[in-house]
Amino acid sequence: MNGKKMISCLSIMMALASLTACSSDDPVTGGNGGGNENTGYSWSTDNGLKACDHILFDDKGNENVNGNVIGNGDQEFVFKGKQTLKKGTYLLKGWVYIADGSQLTIEPGTIIKGDKDTKASLIAERGGQIIAKGTATEPIVFTSEQPAGSRKPGDWGGVILCGKATNNQTEMQIEGGPRTKHGGNSDTDNSGILEYVRIEFAGYPFKKDKEINGLTLGSVGSGTTIDHVQISYSNDDSYEWFGGTVNCKYLIAYRGWDDDFDTDNGYSGNVQFGLIVRDSKIADTSQSNGFESDNSADGSAVSPYTTATFSNITFVGPKLDNQFKNSEDYITGGNMNPNNGAALGKFQSAMQIRRNSRLNCFNSVALGWPIGLLLDNQKGDTQGSATAGSLKINNFYFAGVDAVGTDANKLYDNVLVTGYDSDSKPVTDQKQKSFSSTWFLGQSGNRVFDNIADLAFESNGYMPTNASPVLNAANFASLGSWFSKVTYIGAFAAGDNWLNSWTNFDPQNTKY
Image (spheres, helix red, strand yellow):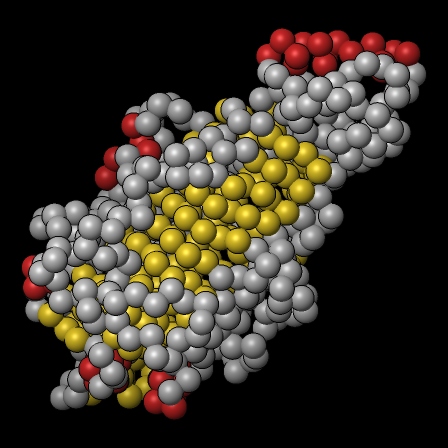
């Protein structure tokens, strides 16, 4: 290090020391990549500086000039090594990549605000890790930089994890715009930890119809921990899995724009305990669903198939708003419309399974949706998988749905689809019920209630009372040892609320 650069670094570090505390009292030692493993940055072994983990260094050794900024506002900011963000409030600028072999640890209670102008996103590349392990009393929050009362879906990018597990396209470019690819052959790969984490107002559309999801999981392996995560007001899907084997528990999708849980390209992990809550004014032009599941975009019969297994999910649909109408004069985005090019549409189903997906769902409940189940056979043979038993939906209750099932996208009538015409429009037999409804009603443990009130839930729409029929309806006979064996269907037992302390259902007005 030459003398001029040493003086510059000393000045920066002294200024930062006045803003934020150092993470260690040990001097930074070693040469290139030494000390805090900030690759490419050379420290003098006798300069007396302390290791301040607040600072992030990119792969060229350039550090931030402000201790509470992550990234530098450029489109791509890559850092290598192992660094820790001490508890505090930070501004995330630009697309920040955690490179292969690198690890970013975020302490409990930390708040990271995404910069709107630079479409801020945090991306763990294959071999990189985010260790964001919050607690129930000190969750880690990723949110909008906009002031309380002014936040909108899509204020910033989102959080993306990319791993080395399998998918059915071998290697894939991650959705949303970043450079990162995902996929490999290591199904036990570890992309880190997201535990007691909230992600709010994500989904910036960097191009038309190219939004980033709240949380995107590309070929993420089973060594990764995803546990107690809440996504609120995402401008696209709340969660989307592209292949991978990661298992997840205690997930919340709150008032997202498009789909809540989207599974694609051979995702084969397990998910238990999930809550979906919709805003009756916000739906996507593609038709919003609780679940949307594909095997591949063209419906190909490629393996590994999308065979993820979900259990204990509660789908709270838009019809819980008594004023709800499934029409574009009602679904306006309300005060959450960002006017950023994201197009509004209608609500569709609690579950749309299509394009050869073999998704499984057990011990769950959906209330207040226009459609319960949509098994879409336009591409691939999803209905054939259902008939053969390779797609299973059991112990699932619908309440207050307009149609138990329909057979085609954007078709709201419970009639049998017999094929498609030359314009790809469904041909129907009006005298017969849909395949989807007939099949659903023939599966073990499934029930349909005419009225939402029949479920005897509390006024919040998702917590059962002691009189609810969901409490002793579960069956785990066909589920593996990973699942917690509980007696109830849906996400909650009466009085057992795992939402306490760490969640936030009014992030718009929270002063961070």
